[in-house]
Image: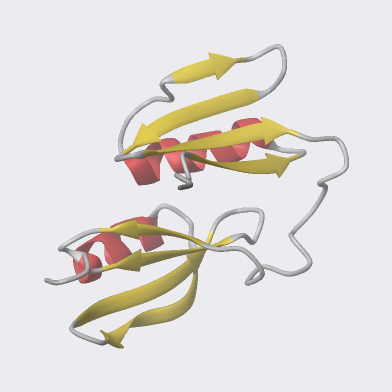
Length: 120
């Protein structure tokens, strides 16, 4: 049995991306290695990391290839809050099954989604 425990985002601008996710998540990084440009947060049961990567310059070429999701009972409210932090709107909140889903992009163009918790 497998357990997905972390997601890593490589970027040439890890400090700027870390500042963005610090605001999105609402707390400073739980782990910081300034020498290597690494920042990481425990978010629920998953660890989200941002890592300096010299080969990951500019916006991502395939932003929808890999996405990660944040679940929240307040999709519309969190969407509005995160939009003001500089996220790019990809898709406004809309119905999905029994809940809501919205898609945004971070400063590197990586897509992430806000989703209602399953079963709510």
